[in-house]
Length: 309
View 1 (tube, rainbow, N blue to C red):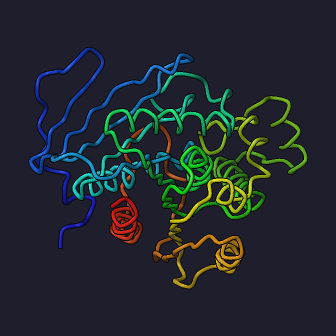
View 2 (view 1 turned 60 degrees about the vertical axis):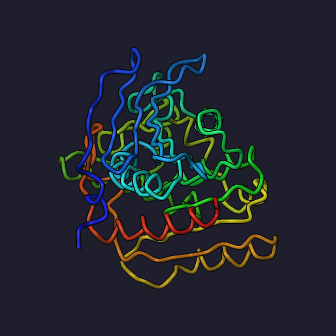
View 3 (view 1 turned 90 degrees about the horizontal axis):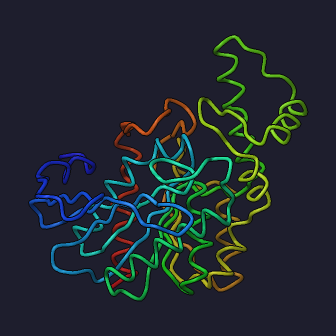
């Protein structure tokens, strides 16, 4: 059976340019992809718009994770967008201001800025499709961005891949990746206290070749996913866990139970795959993903197709 990320990879054509600064791709299935920039007034957001052949019955904003995690996730996000478009759902992907092909510097990134970018993209997607009920999908920190952006669309469907359920633990993993990277290069990592003091003083820290801004760290370290879901009045939510063990983690089970107490139903799925989120990814080049990670795509496509019908 053909891997899902390859199913729609062939069959694309490039017609004549539609306008300056915009690239249009057409697929044999009828999907079109328009790549270009959206002017926010504070700079240009890089966007990719995937449109179904016969109009959209739903619309989804895909919120990427950050830095190395974004690079590792982009192939999966692209394949998800193709599958959603093939099922009649319009999709818009983007790069946050200060990342990828968008304008801005990483040092200017804050959580509110990431959320504002997602809300801007959602407004543009609604304008292009005429679909009022926008849904959101996000991976890792992008899942929290998706949940926060959904506040502007109360009750919006949310699909989240490996969202951080404990931000202290999330950043411990990030800083552990930095330490391992330094040790591999034969460099001294220093103490946690020294690292954090330098991080705050310099305003940025290198995580395996990727700059993490202190402004983003300090505006995300106290986030709680449940608070974001409650604020968004979430009714349709899916969380996909990616880990070696198929059993749901205790923290995810606890979140589902806490959410239920607030009247929020969270569907869960476990994908047997161990992602090295912060390693092997530097620069915006595609990183190949293994089949286990791709199992999240049909699960998510079915959920969003049902939620947006």
